[in-house]
Length: 395
DNA sequence: TCTGGGGTCCTAGGACCC
DNA sequence: TCTGGGGTCCTAGGACCC
Image (cartoon, rainbow, N blue to C red; front, side, top):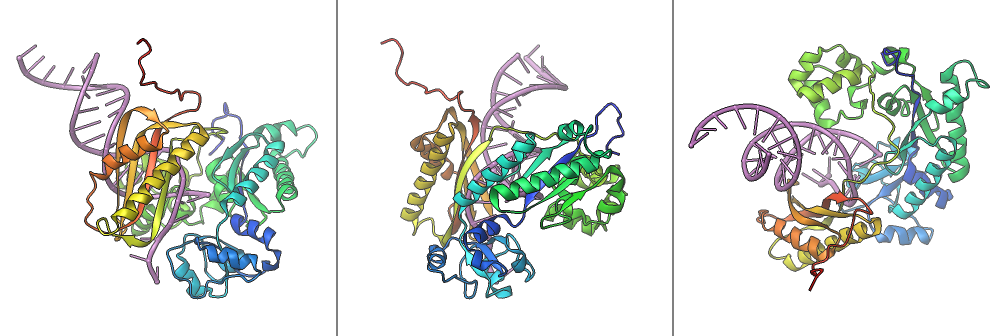
């Protein structure tokens, strides 16, 4: 299926996923917690202060709006997974240790593991802080002379080298999937967690991939999955057996055709080693919902602060943008956005605040608000950002 | 048990221009 | 003067991912 076109050379694509990344970084710092259920999430300073005293906060009695960012495998065994509300997690695992997220530390370890990988295989695509795609095709070809006769075995040997390098650089473990494309590799890396290497050859798709839940396909989320289930489709194999025309009828031309290909394990997307950011944003959920009138002063302060932080981010990264966006989430979780495109790109907090303020006027403010966000899009890349002088040149 | 924060991509209608 | 079609930009919302 993948190498049906003989003119296209075979690809060997890896997906590397760090195992319980944030929690594992915390365990490097607090090795005494190894073996215990540990949850990273929330934003209570007190949890950090207690940890520094050697007394760790537990989930018992947690109140607040935090969600689980990562949980150790011990916590997962108790039913605690990412994106779950901490209140619910506390019911399932009251004695699990709760640690606040320390993104600076995670970013540091992220740079370290990616650097270790690039030293072995430079074709790396960033997929966030804890995962990457790696195009191993060149490495597999280069090792043809001295390595095993089977290219998949040579790809597996490369993955083993990468795992070892990541462990030596960071002390952390990762799981790797190797297949002909990104779609399948993303599925494969999950098959033997933690610490595994899984290879799916083109001929394995029917036997290994088709029995899996359709939801395992990256791009089939909660909504699409629920609809598929209503239509009687649960596994990837069942999806693969559906008519393309029928899928297009149900999900639209683009999405339906994509599903049809995905279920067959077909995916041509290249490994992209660099791409420009499209937008930069900051948002915050309040501890308690704020009233647009009664809490106006607080809202204004937070709003201005968000604009300042977005401006800081833009300046630090060297971008400017001309589409300023506002995001509001009401107490009932309904979310609205407004945006305004200004004449020339800006990275200035005051200009952003002014444009976002215009957006705010177009939003109904008749309910309490739980989240406020500011975004700058239509970015000009660094270098293209030149100061626009309001002063005439000749006068 | 009510659901974080940072992103990307897609759709769709209307404005506007050629 | 009227009609048509295509391309691009702007805006709003939503699905999805880590």
